[in-house]
Image (tube, rainbow, N blue to C red; front, side):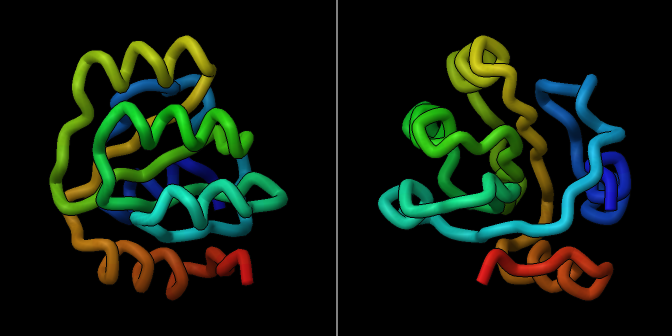
Length: 113
């Protein structure tokens, strides 16, 4: 599944990182606990409701390149600037974490574990 397909499926908005939309992805991880994110391997997509600069910093430390922010939260300019500096893609989704994960799983995106 491509990031473009994910954006369409989630009725989402690409906030930064549009150049990456044709990349294929196979796995994702959902969490609001950034300590869990720091344990990740294989750099999946992060799906989270946590919308602050610490989210971007944690993703950078964990080597994650894509974050989907759920619950119709809008990233701040500071978040977007930091994401752009770190060559990350940030996607904003109107759905709950549960619904976003369910839609992605149903469409074939696999959990990390």
